[in-house]
Structures are given as structure tokens and as C-alpha cells.
Length: 261
Image 1 (cartoon, rainbow, N blue to C red):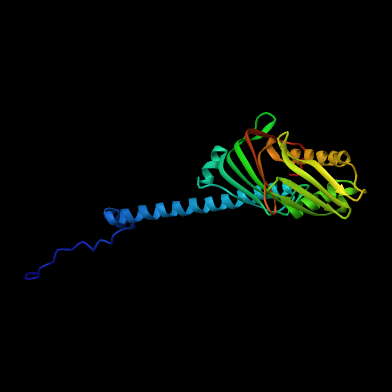
Image 2: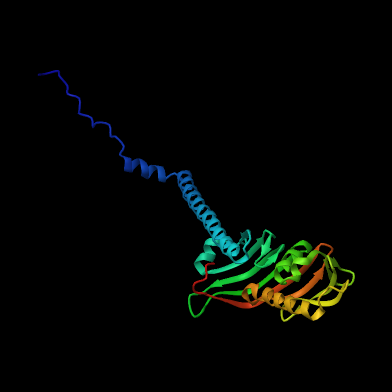
């Protein structure tokens, strides 16, 4: 028909596909920055979560081992170096250990604060753990010394009623219902020892030699109780007890079979 004009067909509007939208979005620099920040944030959160879990797990395990050895409650903390990295390298640094102060094995009333500069785990040979440097500060209360000696010295130990320290002359006095014993704490064979100086009483006190033998035996037990071959470096008397520092360098702890700890 004449006079009728046909309009050209127009292409239907194109609906953007999801891939196109994503490409356009990532052409925007701000979107790229936001995406990178989100990825980094998620990674940091994951690392922090892993670090917190690793620290909680490691401190719990080590605290249980220390509590088993010391027979007392203990708290453990690790240094600022990321623990996840330390687990990968099997080298741990800045470990701090502190017991509650109720006892350390046979020593009643003894509190131990230990610092381990470097600890390495090994799976070769008879040695499982090596310690580059470790020191322990111990404090032993007068009442704890009394309780310990009561159980350490047969028969006569039960007669001890009190213990007092005299920092002025560096001696300890053991009081009994029959008299008193004056002894001097000292460093001996890498540990602590009590040297009996004076036995005073009403004629019922045992001779000095019979008291020195059980005290020496007890001192030997204390030396073997300290871990990693630690030896005493210094000794000091206070009004409330005895303080000492033990240390060890390049020490090895063998893997003991059948050890419950």
C-alpha cells in the first residue's frame, strides 16, 4: 500500500549479564581497594584466630606438664613472637612459668618463677627438649620449711614447732619443745643445704651429727628435684624465708619412658 511507512525494527534493550557487571565493577579502582581490604581483613582475622587458639592450647598443655612435675598449680605464658611461627620452627622463646607456691614436689611452701629464653623440640636421639638458657627464682617460706622438715627428718622432725630466719647472721633457727637448732643455709653441690651449727636444749636434744645426716639426705632430694640439671647460683635470707636462684645453660631433658608427666 502506498503511503504506509514501515519503521525499522530496533534491537531490543540489552540486559547486562552478571559477568559484564563484575567486569565493570572491577574497573572501578575503589572497588578493587575494597575487595583487597576485605581479603586482607579476613586473612588477619583467620591468623589471629589461629594464634589465639594455638596460645590457649600450648599454655594449657605446658601448664599441665608443670603441674604434674611440681605437684602444684601453675600458670604459663609465651613471649610476643607469633606462636604459629614458633610451632612451625619448633623453637620457642620467652616462656614464663610460675607455680602457685603451695609446694614444689617435697618442698612445702615453695614458689617457683621460671624463665626459659629458648626451648627447642627434637625428635632425634635420647634428648627430646633442649634449653639454651633457663633460670628459676624460688622463694621458700619459713612455715613451708617447717612443714617440709617435719616430714623429712624421721622422729625428730615431728618435734619442730616453728622456723625463723635471721638475715643479719645468715642462719635459720628450728624451734622444738625441747630446745632449738641453729643451722646455716648454704650452696653445696649445685643445690641448697643446711649446715647444723648449734644444738641447744635441756639435755634431751640429739647430737648434731644425728641431725646433719637426715638434713643432708633431704638436701640431696631437693637437688635432684630441680629440672634440667639446674644448679643454685645465689642464696639470700629474708625475714619470711629463703630466696634462691637456679639456672642452667644448654641443658637437655631426655624423653623418659613411662613417665606420667
